[in-house]
Image 1 (tube, rainbow, N blue to C red):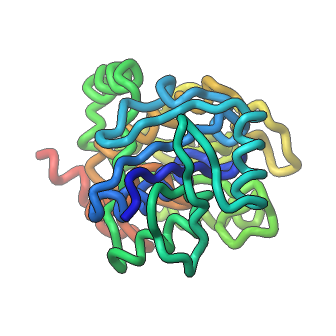
Image 2: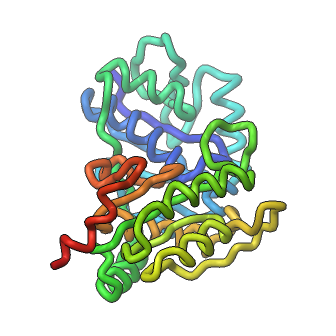
Length: 283
């Protein structure tokens, strides 16, 4: 059986995608007693942030930061070769259908999930713990605003119109999303986390007691302004939002966010009728 599994994702993969891949690889590795090395592309998918700028160490995982050029070389080898040499060791490129043997390299989600399924039908998601300085900031913020008594509202707007995730940057879909949320009474205390200035403004105008972390909406589209995904400050703000969302009393999750699997038990679904009674729980 393999001694070490090395893994990496495509350059445009965001943090949620990367941890999904890592979770699958670690499922297989933990079952077979292998070590794990994750190659972290310092690319546009994570606003060119190094791993340690965003996250605390993951137990049992060694992370190596790679430049875009280095990751491009790895991607070429993964697609064109059967072996990758790294750190004096030869890694066999694993592809679905292969029999795993020796040290392996897994490129992106599909091979990683195939590895995990050799061990289990489902697997635990690896928690992405924000870096200590990020957690320190959100701890102060959460205490000051009573975050545990608030309803966290997460709305992630999809920028690629061909994808099925909703809402996309289409005004009809944005308004449908707002309409579904503003059925919740205005007096509900909320924490807002969205990459759309329009969504934030509409919800903040409805909920009398709404809070949100300050951010810049630097990308102009016909349907409004959005967060620039290649902005380092925006990436750090997103992780602060994730930390806050996970501490909210209940959560509305539209579009998904990092670590949302760990708080499924707090997630509400349309028509969000139980949100009307959140204020009673504080009495």
